[in-house]
Amino acid sequence: MIKKSTLFTLLLLVLTLNIQSQSKFNFFGSNNTEISFRFKLVNNLIVIPVDVNGRSLSFILDTGVDKTILFNLSQNDSIGLNNVKKINLQGLGDGLSIEALLSRNNTMKIKTFISKSEDVYVILRDRFDVSGRMGVTIHGIIGHKIFKDAIVYINYSTKKITLYNPLFYKDKKCRKCQVFPLQFYRNKPYINAKVQLDTIGDKLTDVKLLIDTGGSSAVWLFENTKEEIQTPIRYFRDILGEGLSGTIYGNKSRIKGLTIGTFHIKNPTVSFLDSLSTYYARQFKARNGSIGGNILKRFKIWVDYPNKTITLKKNGSFRGGFEYNMSGIDVVYNGKVLVREKEDAQFIDSYSSRNSHTTTNNTINLVSSYTYRFRPSFKIKHVLPNSPGDKAGLKENDVILSINSIRVHELTLRELLGKFQDGNLRKIRMKIQREGKTMKFQFKLVRKI
Image 1: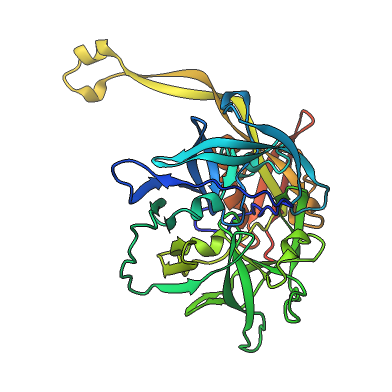
Image 2 (image 1 turned 90 degrees about the vertical axis):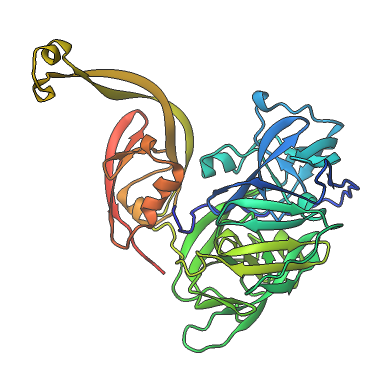
């Protein structure tokens, strides 16, 4: 979804555990002042490489978690976990706690930024299917363990992160930057902001929001945490993602504006969540919601946990719009399938070439051959009731074969989901496979907010 908001919101995890760890990341090597590395930006989420016990894995960098979590390990990703015991985890969602493993004294490193005594929580069943929703393999989530031991500079435009050693870091002069204090609760950072909920006047409401790099949406607001925070008249019911304890639903709408210092962001999409679906997230009574990747990606960011500050500077995407999935269908990666592909090769007739005074008379032969390659497959995971996709007759577990005459294995998940954000009343034609039968459907996208 190029320069657009994403369907999927990776939910912050709220663990009902008070296990304290004395682990610490340290800078090693000849240059122990800073290290830099590239990251992937997938659905507004930061994906970074982290070595765990010598095995390179992909983690989402998430300020919304204070524990390191693994949830997608296969035999090929074996990391030799140390000192393992069973525990229970509880998070957002409508279900009960789930079983997991706690492993102590693991070695983790990002280049020369290394800790040799890390606790890792392993979810044995990846019920929220992060890899499927993002279209790339994701092994886990990491947050506070990195931020607490470094000053982290995130450049969303260049997809580059620099970790600075707090012992040697000196503030750089930065024009048009603004520095904001952070408040922490259970090792998670909160910032003060203002939201303009009144669509008629200019009234601003003060809010305290979690800074959540692990959430791909723009803004969440928790209903009734202030008298003014209520779902607007225009909204629709939406699937926001999966938590440790099940599917998260909310009412999606827009607000007139979000203000952080002197930065004013116009008409962001906002998801309003009720008290039931956010019970554990509301343990911090002062919290009113969160800001996610679709806001944060509009800034250059310096996150300074040691000094409890965050510095923001607008980047080139600051004024971009906020789009959303208008189809009502939730699509995920469905593994790879073997696809037959035609290849045409051109050959010049050498005899004609030898007997012609010019090359224009050469005989060109077209030879077709077929190859088989593994290509991505996508399926529908959820269908929102009364949405355009639902009214057209699409169902859960339908495997998508093509969209608007484009075979889906030629698209990435990001490109496929982008088709559902591209234009009010745009016609969508889909070919799907259901229980071995090929079927065709069509509907129009409807902008509800």
